[in-house]
Amino acid sequence: MVEAQTWTTRRGSNPRLETEQVIEIPSTPTGESRYGGGAGNSLSPTITTGLFIGSWYLSNIGVLLLNKYLLSIYGFRYPIFLTMLHMISCAIYSLIAIHWLELVPLQHITSRRQFFKIFGLSGIFCFSVVCGNTSLRYLPVSFNQAIGATTPFFTAIFAFLITCKKETGSVYCALLPVVLGIVLASNSEPLFHLFGFLVCIGSVAGRGLKSVVQGILLTSEAEKLHSMNLLLYMAPMAAMILLPFTLYIEGNVLGLTIQKAKEDSFIVFLLLGNATVAYLVNLTNFLVTKHTSALTLQVLGNAKAAVAAVVSVLIFKNPVTIMGMTGFGVTIMGVVCYSEAKKRSKVTAK
Image 1 (cartoon, one colour):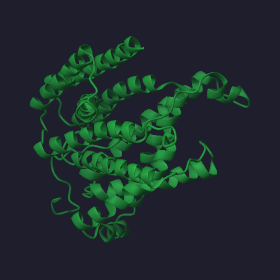
Image 2: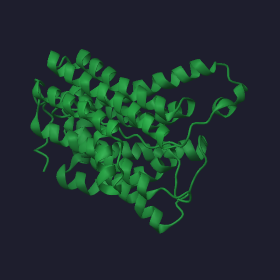
Image 3: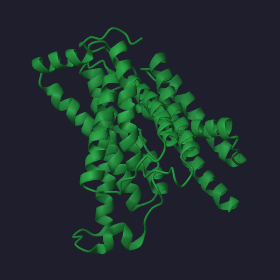
Image 4: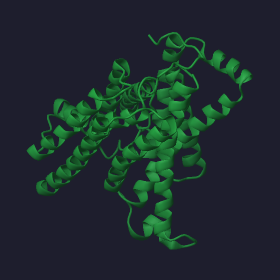
């Protein structure tokens, strides 16, 4: 049960923002198909790509900081309701992007079996995002990002447990510094909170589980969905899953939010802006991958965690230690080594 909700700010609480909701994206287009052949494009491909990367960074870090501010500083103690608003926003904006703007072709759910597979993924998605947002109430963003960097570890573990897929020895060895870095960072984190740490681990584990389950459930060509189409169907399902939980756990949250809006209209701006930026994370993720590659996105993601940690420390002034920064650095280096080891193992397997 979530503790009793109040509008007072919890001293020392330091929530984390969920982002992660990265959905797999098809192979990267190349050449003219990537940039529309250059017709009518006043910006060079390099500048266009740079703008998309900058937008991706801003949206990812922005949603983290906004979630942090809402859940910890501002005193909006409803992480499940906030996540449901994110899902509703993603559903509406996805509908606009696909049906009206036609950014990607619309794909339909072709069978009841496929529907239940997507519904199952939505449940895992909900668990991951709610845990991530809840952890932001208790942990600083910098520590949250350090924990989030361990996603490859959980992905490898779930891949082995569920599919019995074994990686090479070098891949598993590369995961050791990922875990070691978090141990170092945890032991020296001034604002360490056990519950916040556990739900943050749950969020990262859910992210890894979703990646593995998605690969299993949507493998056939008939069932594969473009990332934006997948979000179009997952978001409303996730909102429906979250609705009874927010009503049961968080009580009359809608009424309390409306009452708060009457007293302070700024919260309306915060919630609408927060929900919009949550969708932009997914949209810019798609655009960056389209104009670069999935591997480039992975590298940028590793750097993003460090940038988000630095920005959050500068804004929220949460204390950091030399050992904590060292642990974060070790984790990031472990993720980089893991990516390189995975790339080499795929080349060897061909």
